[in-house]
Image (cartoon, rainbow, N blue to C red; front, side, top):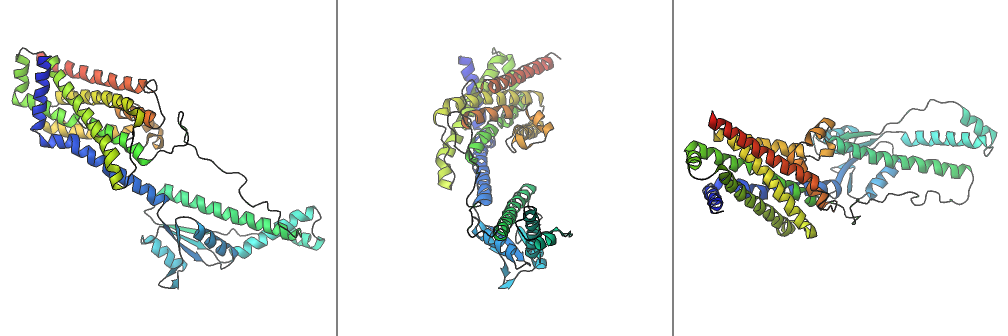
Length: 429
C-alpha cells in the first residue's frame, strides 16, 4: 500500500507541474458544459419562444388572404410583416428580402385563390346536395357541368440557410392552417345551401386533441430539458478527455528514462499502473463533482435551469466511476503504444472526439443513419451516456444500468490487458 500511495503521489506531482494538462482536465470541460448548454437552450428558445417574422404578400385580397393573415397574427410567436418603409411588399421584393437573409420565410397568396375555392366548393356542394334533391334541378345540373379546375399554389420562400427540419415544420403548420380554412369554407356553404337558420356548431371546439406525456418510471409528465441532456453528456466527455494528459505523461516517462528507472526498482509494474489508476480515478470523480456543482449553482446565475440529481446521485457516481476506469484504460493503452507526445496527444484528442460523435454526445443516436447507429453501439461513450440517461431521464435503477456498466468495465480490462501485453512484448524484444 505504501508503494501504491508513493506511485500515486508521483502522478499528482506530474500533474501539478503540467498546467496545460490540468486545464484540459478541469477548465475545458467546465467551459464546454456551460457553452454548449447555453447554445442549445438558446436554440430551443429561438425555435419555440422568440418571435418569428413572416413576410406575407396577399395578391388575392380576398377571403383566403384575410383568413391566413388573421390566423398568423393570432398565432403565438409569429410577427407578420406586410410592409417595408410604409409600402406594401410585393412578390419580387419578398423573394429578395428572404434570399438576402433579412427574413427566413415569405408567404405569397396568389390572385384569384379565394374566387377559385368558392366556385369549386360551391359546385361540389351543389352536386352532393343534388343527389339528395336538396337543391333545385337547375342548380344541380349547373353543378354537374364538368370543369377543369386549376390547382392554386401558395408560394413559400425560405432563406437558403434554413434547415430541412425547419422548412418541413413551417410547411406542415401552414398546410394545417389552409386545411382548416378549406374545411370552414365547405362547412359554411353547406349551411347556406341547406337553408339552416342556425349554425349547428359542428366545428366549434376541438373534437380530438393530443396530450403529450413523457413516459418515465413512476414519474410521468416531466419534460426533459437541454440541461438534463447536456450535463451527463459533457461530464462523460470531460472524463474521457483524461486520456490526453495520461497518455502524455506515459510518453514522458519513456522518453526521459523515468520508465526504465521504475522498472529496475523493486516495484512491480502493477504498482506503477495502480498509482496511475488511483490518481486518475480520483481526478475523474473530482471532475464529476465539479461539473455537478456548476450545473447546480452556476447554471441558475446565467439563466439556465438548475440541475439537481436528487436521489439519483449515488447511481450517477457509480457511472462516473466505471466510465473513469474505461477512460483510464484507454489512456494507458494510448500512452503505452505511442512513442512521442506528438503521437499521443493528437491521437488521443481526436479519438475521444470520434468516440463522442459516435456515442451521441454531439448528435443523438436516434437521428443517425442506420449504419451509424449500429457502429455507435460499440462506443464506450454510448454505453456511458445510455446509463446516465437511464438514471436521469428514465428513473432507472442499478439493475437497469448493469449492462452498460459491465461493458465499460470490460472495456477497461481489455485496454489495460492490451497495454500490458504490448509493454511485455516490447520489453522482451
